[in-house]
Length: 71
Image 1 (cartoon, rainbow, N blue to C red):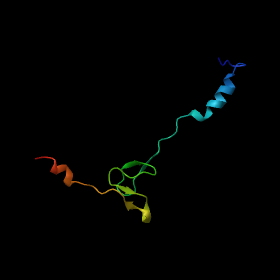
Image 2: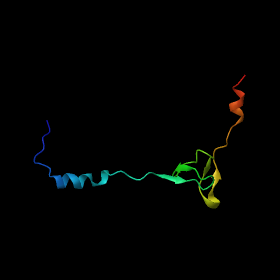
Image 3: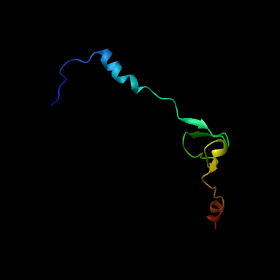
Image 4: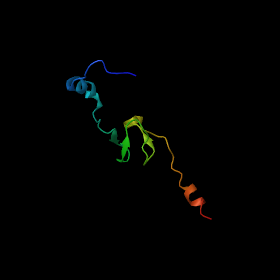
């Protein structure tokens, strides 16, 4: 069974854990509709991706399928 050869001091343990901190959220504002979205992801509200003149619509909203299920 593996056993530590010597005690790990608080300083060494802290230095190892220095990168374990909580990172800030990766949310940004959609340039098309202003909703929050994940960086480098398609906006869930409007379906656009990118910003400025590189912005393009990736997902088309399908509203007719919602009404077809009710018979």
